[in-house]
Length: 122
Image (tube, rainbow, N blue to C red; front, side, top):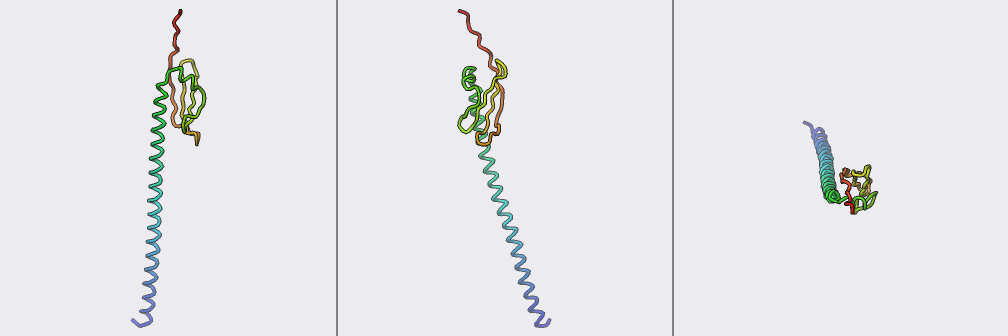
């Protein structure tokens, strides 16, 4: 090997090392970005799950309301961070939906049967 060829080889080794470090840096940055976005997705999922559970508990409480309370809350009204919509398509059936007031997205919807109260004759 001549002296000139040795200098060219050293330059190629340096270039290969720089290319290898660049590839490692890009791969590491990609892995870091992926990990950060995964953590953000997990955090969003946990918050959505908690909000769903709170909304479900509220709708559970609404399901226990007697007919008079459902009539009193008839229509669309704000209940905390939700929109509660109570409708009555027939005299014994109530349709209830709970929506996110920020997005308008329906979280839960259900129907309740409440029999008509027969008044005793005097």
